Image 1 (cartoon, one colour):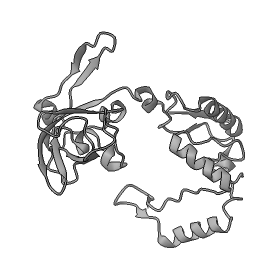
Image 2 (cartoon, rainbow, N blue to C red; image 1 turned 180 degrees about the horizontal axis):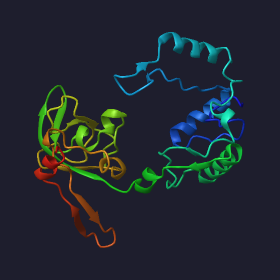
Image 3 (spheres, one colour; image 1 turned 120 degrees about the horizontal axis):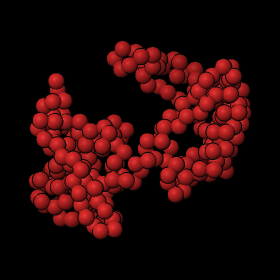
Image 4 (cartoon, rainbow, N blue to C red; image 1 turned 45 degrees about the horizontal axis):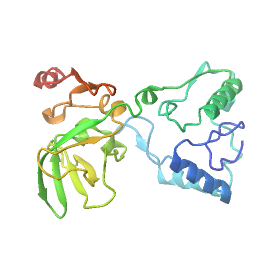
Length: 262
């Protein structure tokens, strides 16, 4: 098996280079210096949370030692002994194949090699790519105050409308965010102490009634939302970029929250 230098290496075939700009920069540095990268899972294993167990420290140390001693370089790919017996392999989601700079030709070549090597049908989950950059989440400042830094309470909730902000975590991009100026900490309307979206340099004054928008929200904010604490879900609108017309597709009420509980 090839030594994975700046790439995720599949079996002994061609590597698939990582797609995003930051990862490509990292891959370039790894190639320049001949470094290897290993992803070691030290988290939860053998069952769901609170029922399984965490990776023991002793096992983690043995894995790290094997990496440092180059013992894993010659280790066969985990499912390689079953090549020829597998009916299908799911490569999962998160592939931004609709993005302008995505390496689609390399992905196609990789998938063809994978099918040839394994004898299995290869599946991708393109859900995120379908909705990539397809929606924005518009919010309003409800109140503002000072607590060591400017704080704004908004009608957008991290835990209800953008749970990946807390779970991943990640920082959603804001439309028109300023490059300079004082950052404002945005919080949601729920009672959760951690309902914090992040610190942003707002393109509008930090005052009640001012509106802002987060970009690229359709693929998560429309799928993973919840109504914790009775927080209302955002209405869904369709914008025609040619005519600038807005059409409300769906709105949500208290009854939607109530009916989800029984």
